[in-house]
Amino acid sequence: MGVPVVTLAGETWGARMSASILTAAGSTELIAHSPEEYVAKVMALANAPARLAEYRASLRNRLLASPLMDVEAYTRNFEAAMRDAWRRWCAQSSA
Image (cartoon, rainbow, N blue to C red; front, top):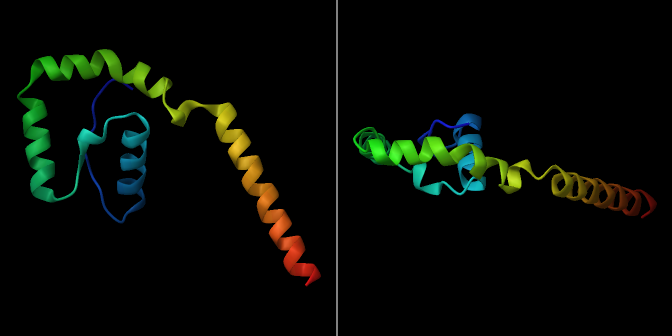
């Protein structure tokens, strides 16, 4: 939670999950959309010690303050989705 991760957005679960986490943490600049962009982002980050230090100092708090860590909102949204699924199932079953 303090080490920046560059990800290559793609079709695999890991690519989608890491892009989702970076988006929730407000770090979309770490998401690459091609292998060439991935290498460029990694190289730029590796050659910027001050930027790396800023990430290391701020990433944990950014992630903790992100919607990803908002358990109450996640729970409310999940409960609402389950209620909606139940209502749709009941409506379909009675039709």
